[in-house]
Length: 353
Image (tube, rainbow, N blue to C red; front, side):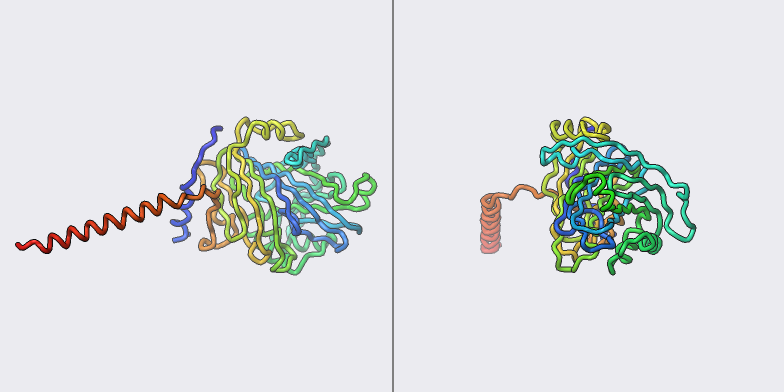
């Protein structure tokens, strides 16, 4: 699919409407909120790649934990039900660090009680990937919170509000539970990452950002890198301060070739658009998500930012600074023209009829 550029279309639409991975977070984690039962284990690093092609989002993320204890977990909001959850390839998330490691593919198996209780969260699928127990849930904020508590997760005081924030748009969540005993049996040590890849058919891709602030004090600084791969240059919508688009360009062939060579990444087309965004915001200000346009004919959904229209803003790459002298020269010319017109008017008034 050809790469296209659409730099100004979104800004005009937002004004009219108002009248309407790889992610790394320090110190807050990435696109998942820590909901562990033992405070001595910490989610130290989570990396995410959100790649959208031909109506399907590939969400690749890696969990790294440190500390000691029995178990800890993380919850990630998803835009829709994944059709597959497998172990991701290590090269995808380590590409920028020039590291390569083999990865073993692990298919998920649906549980026998996939429909779940009619009064609680539905368990869509379950699988084990290394030391992680992965569960994909469907339900409202209360149902998912109840499931988490019933399964040994200790929710932070702000968890109900954050879960409701996401459930109002998509009632699909992934819970990843880290089993320290199984990690030890597998020979994993603190800081080792486990990459997973979710294949999610969806018409409206978005990246959860507010979840980064789960359980944090308002003044805590949240820092994250967000890498996107899309068929075309995307329009991006956010809803607050602290998010910048630092690179927006056609992905180079070397990058695409390297990524395509990794496990599970053979789906990548010949051309894609590469976007790199940085999050640097206080937890209290990070109350929004990142909405992405799926194609050149469709705008990102305002609702997927999670905020009201007055707060919504397009995210653009910074343009080159305009030189000062043309603006100064233009202003000088305008002054001279105005003076000449004024002088001509005075002369015309002075001529007797």
